[in-house]
Amino acid sequence: MANPDRELAAHEGTSLSTAGARQLATTTKTQPVMQGISPRYLLSILPWVQVSGGTYRVNRRLTYAAGDDRLNFSNIGVKVEVIPQELLKLPLMRGFQDADDLLIRTLAGRFTQQQYKAGDVIVEAGTSAHQVFLIAHGKAQKLSKGKYGDPLVLDTLADGDHFGDQAVVESNDVWPFTVKALTACTVMALPQDVFEALIVQSPALKAHVDGYKAKLKKPQDKAGQAAIPMSAGHHGEPVLQGGFVDYELKPREYELSVAQTILRVHTRVSDIFNDPMNQTQEQLRLTIEALKERKEWELINNPEFGLLHNADLKQRLNTRSGPPTPDDMDELVTRRRKTRYFLAHPRAIAAFGRECTRRGLYPTVVDVGGAKFQAWRGVPILPCDKLPISRENTTSIIAMRTGQEDQGVVGLHNAGIPDEVEASLTVKRMAINDQALTQYLVSTYYSAAVLVPDALGVLENVALGG
Image (cartoon, rainbow, N blue to C red; front, top):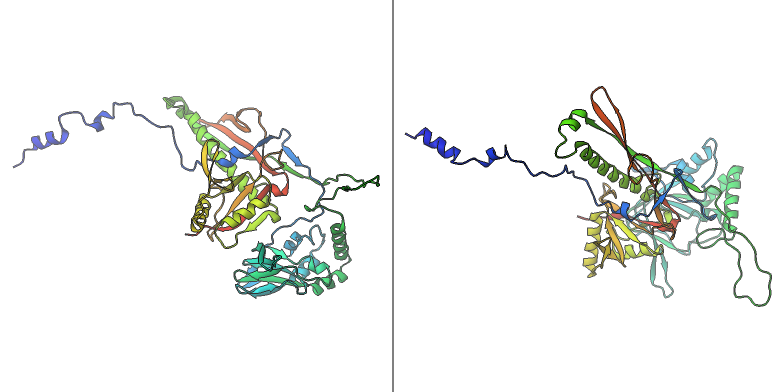
């Protein structure tokens, strides 16, 4: 029979166990840590402009080219319909006033749905241009021929893009390019004669279209700005042209946005459990980290001032095939001077790396602030997990020029405000409530501005692959 005293002695051992010793030892502990803290490279690379008045106005030269944007559509099953108010995003219709929306709804109802298979030609260069086309779904390429007959890809069109809106206001013109479907495409088309019939019926629409035509005929430079008259290469004493630099009468203004939260700390915790670490300071530190994460997310995704939503349509590109290729990145770089940074989701960077490996290319590595980053054409590609990934497993890549001196992208804040713990970030102690909770209002103020359209570009519909 086993001896119970011997078994007990063997179990307890002959010296103090580590489990027992821990009860008397001082543990070595970390500060509280949290998941979700990212490098936040966007916050560090943006030049921050002081906005003491709370509003930042961007004054630009007068531009004759009408604003542009992508259109949205509605559908019931496979039947697609044009949303009437979306037509006001077309350059031709921008600014048109329709008191009862009757004309706009009539115009939207005249679009007919057309289907194209991958490889089908939607329009062919040299044929009569008498329709406006809206791409409701799918991807197509705008093609032309080079000097020696070689094919040229002018642009890639995708959901919400349009072409031919100039065709409906001009007569006897032809398509200067071919549009070919890369995937199955659903297209909404409006014939020129239908639009002309509506112009006859509506004096207001006729006046608007005439004004649009007159604006296009005014002298303008390649960027669509009001031209500055000048002479060059002349001899003798000719009469020089005179003029002035005109400005936009309604420049855009950016108001500082805010991210806020209320931190609650029980007085019992801050009074008794404050050694060796200050509980209030640790709570504030983690709260501030979370606010900074939200700040970067807003700078990218906010519909009013976020970079993804404020890129000019002419600076939004679609990938040629799906994944981000060197050709796509080259196209993104050529749309602006002094491209300083790419901003991409880590998975998009990996997808680009795979495409480079497939072609036998090896991107260079550059130094930014003491850290090494993969680069393309010498432009660093910074990772940012705030760039969204869609259900279709696609994302976007941002390219930008930064700084006021280069008319680039700038961050906006207001440093020096009361109770500030960091630039434009405040912690204000509030009253202690009847539950013995001390409350702190934590706020950060920020925004971002794009000084000229070509400062910011976005490569859209970037497929991430497996």
